Length: 165
Image 1 (spheres, rainbow, N blue to C red):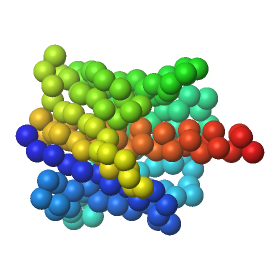
Image 2 (image 1 turned 90 degrees about the vertical axis):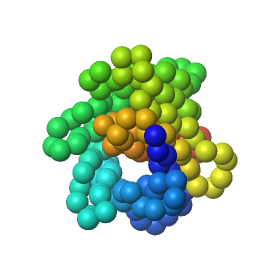
Image 3 (image 1 turned 60 degrees about the vertical axis):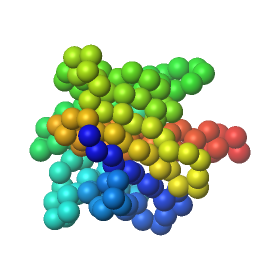
Image 4 (image 1 turned 30 degrees about the vertical axis):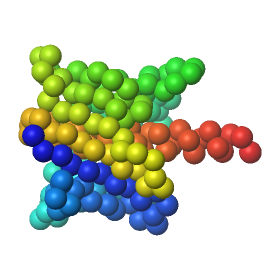
């Protein structure tokens, strides 16, 4: 078991941040497409090689994100249309989610065995998430999930603000 931490700068001019371990050592760099369509995040290893990509499906009525590892789509994260509280579905071979995806407080299971946990860590100006990795095979899936859902939360908040003016 080990932990990773994702801390995104809320108002940064560039979308570049680190995923760090519990000793504060960098594990991945994440680079986002600030003004490009479709929106995407690249997850880079310590050698600056792309190891995974999270891409938002453009011009979709329902927010959908694809997580690719090694050029293959390994997971789809889709926002479920609801009136009260947004909800997301994860489609990944052999994995299920329990808990509140929208609140970023959930567990990932494989055959009823918990293989990872994600929780939003406290309230701050930055978004900080703790990822507990219990199976190294899904480490990138967990990081990709956090990126997609966090971006979806910000996009929904921005849309809500823009419709009130």
